[in-house]
Length: 414
Image (cartoon, rainbow, N blue to C red; front, side, top):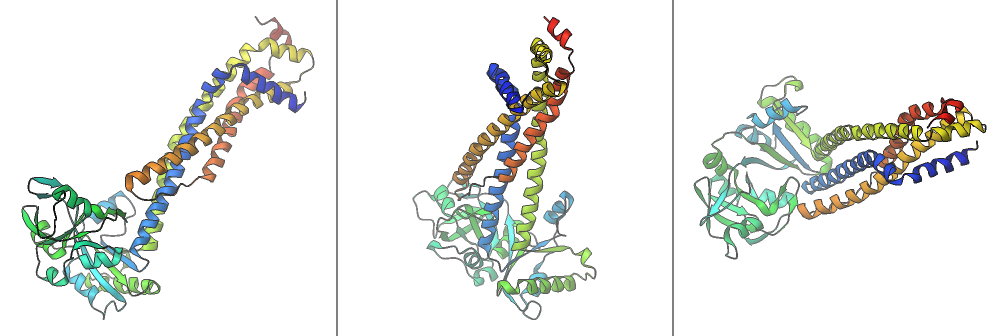
C-alpha cells in the first residue's frame, strides 16, 4: 500500500466523523492554545517591565535591606529587614566613600489612604525626595511646585500628588494650597504631577510623595529605610559605584564576609536579569501544568482510535484479504492519529495567536502602556511538535491492535 493512499484513507476516516474528530482533538487545541497564550503573555510582560525599568536610567542603583533574595524566605527577610538607617545614608552621601554618586535618596513606603473633605482615596504613598523623583523619572509638575531639601530637613508636612489623586479628592477644584489628611496628619499640597501613567513599578498618577523625614517621624515611626536609590555620574561608572557602596556598607555594618551581607545592591541590568529569570521560571511552571491538557487530549485520541478500530474491523479484514500487510495497517492508523493531533496543533496555534494578541491589547488598555505583542515562535514549534509526538505515542497502541487482527476473524465480525 502506497503512503499517499494511506494518507488519503486516513483523511477519509477523519472526514467521515468530522464532529467526533473535532471533539477528540479539543484537549490538544486547548493545551496548545494555553501554552501559546502563557508564552506570549510572559514575553510581552517581560518586555514591558524591562522597558519600564529603562525609565530609571542605566546609571540608577538600588540598595535594599536584607540579603539578596533567592527564595520566598529571603524575600520575607528583605521586607522585614531594618538594616539601612540614617548613618548608612550619610556614609553613602560622603564623597570620600562613594565618589561617583551623583545623588542619593532614601525611600519610605507608607501604607494607608488619603482623604480630603470626606473623600478618600488609596494611592501609593512614598516618603522620598520630589526633586530626585522628577529628575530620575523625568516627571513634570503641572501645577504648583515640588518640595525642596529644606522641606526634607525641616520635616515639613507637604506633599506632591498625582493627577488621578487630585481628580478623586478634589474633582475640578484646584488642589495646590489645600490640605489633605494622611493617617490623621494634615499635609499641604505643594504641587500636582502632570499625567504620566505607569512608570517602572507604580502609577505616577496615583502617587503621593512626602518628605522621607516627615514620613519616618509622623507616618511610620520607623528609623530605617525601605531602600536607598543612588544615581551614578555616568552609566560607565555604575560598576565602580556598586563596589564603593558595598565596601562602605560592609564597613558600616562590620561585615567581613560578603556572604553575610545584610543588604543587597541591584543595578538596572541586574534587575532586568532577575525579573527575566522569575518570569521564565513562572512561564515554564505554567506550561508544565498546562501540558497535562495534552496528556488528557492524548488519552482522548487513544480512546477514539480504539473505537474507530472496532467500528472498522470488517474494513481491516477486507484490506488484509486483498494483500494489506501488518505494516500497511499500522501506518494507516498511525497517520490517522497524527493527522488528528496535527490539525489540533494547528488550530491551537491559531487560537493561541488570537488570544495572545487580544491579551496584549487588554493589558495595554488596563495599564495604559504600550504592550508589544510577542508571537512565541518557539512555543508554536514546541506545540506542533508535541501534538505530533502525542499522536504517535497515543496512536501506536490502537494502530497495533488494528494491525494484529486476523483477517478471517475480522471478516466474520458483525
